[in-house]
Amino acid sequence: MKKIKIETAFDIYENIKELSFPVQKLLKKAAEARKKAYAPYSQFFVGAALELENGEIISGNNQENASYPSGLCAERTAIYYAGAEFPDQNILRMAIVAGSTKISTTKPIPPCGACRQALSEYEVKQNSNIVLYFMGTSGQIAVSKSVENILPWIFDKSVL
Ligand code: THU
Image (cartoon, rainbow, N blue to C red):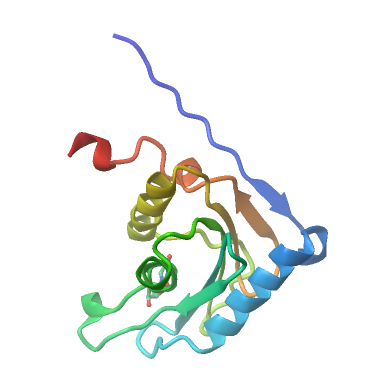
């Protein structure tokens, strides 16, 4: 028997002003996208914005549906659009801003498991890290150096 140990770490910033200007801009784009989310059922509004290597910024938000499982998270809305429209452009980073209108959400809110798997597909495809920045409607910002960092030992194409 042997053990496999996987360690993960995040950088936590207290204020958006501690981050570089391009990252501040990306977080602001995610916050703007959040305002346009369609979340009448959960009242949990999420905005995502990703930056491509050509400088293009793609944003998305959660789109809910009366048939609940038919809705889609903000992260996947954004990354699937990027994949569809700019299939040859690497994704440098993604910012995510999330929060409920029912309770205060001032802690960093990480992507759900399904989004982690979906985002990891693109990180594997482009063979370079996608840096993730995530936060609530205010407060701290968490930074993950890659998708793999929040989804270690992933299921990927290497086994297919
Ligand atoms: N949601 C996202 O957009 N991203 C996540 O990573 C977690 C959850 C959305 C899905 C649903 O519309 C609402 O938040 C509540 O789960």
